[in-house]
Image (cartoon, rainbow, N blue to C red; front, side):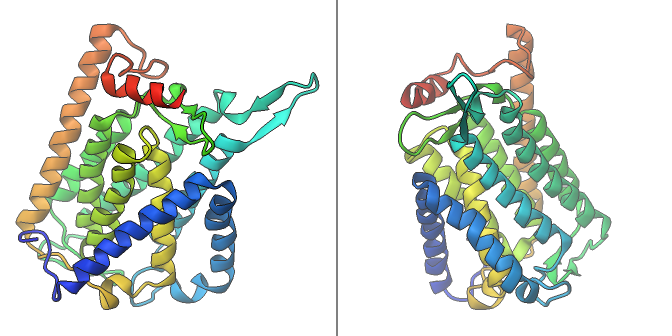
Length: 320
């Protein structure tokens, strides 16, 4: 891919495509079946935590999966998956015989934006940490190649803006179909694209030679379903594909380095460009959103900011 990646063998891109479609397929399985979701995001992780990851993700291993960040990211992603399943399906009968649903509780609707913000913040801290390493010509840290530069600061700021532009969470609904998806109408395409650009830049900056998979493929695996399979459910798609990928990486840590490597070009210009795009997109979104809030006198903590857009209306109509 020119300035971004260099693969020694084109067959690795075929494997990349397989990874992309496998993530989408397992996401659909977990999305459309409650029991499959519980198996994938609760039963399997417990088994792996006890019997597999102590070996494959041991601290100091040669593939870098034993870092605090990988372990935290694994369980925060799985917490999101299980939390969203609970939000979609947990219900109980009150003393008066009325059936209550977890998603009816305002405090429960705070969980999706909170876990999302925490995940973004973890990555922002990592970008700043990589800058602090002072590897201006590149180097290996925790068994992963990386290079420090202004791109880390630029993308860290982009991530902070991305957190600040999360909006409309009190408008989250559960779809009326059998899959009972968690639908976030106010999370329209503009925020999703800004997030994708920021997250890709983060993976490119901090997990450079793995970013073809954990950045490009992983982001497409949740963005494609959002636009073409189940609109409005981006965060649910994101949590599940992230959970699936990170479990796989923790189990087969040599995959991106030995079995099917697609390294970056290690070109400083590439790092600068992807981070600049991320900062520009998130900066533009923040300015637009601020102006929209001011013009319409909206409360960003309570109101849905994009209720007047066709994208919002379409998602709401499809899922009510």
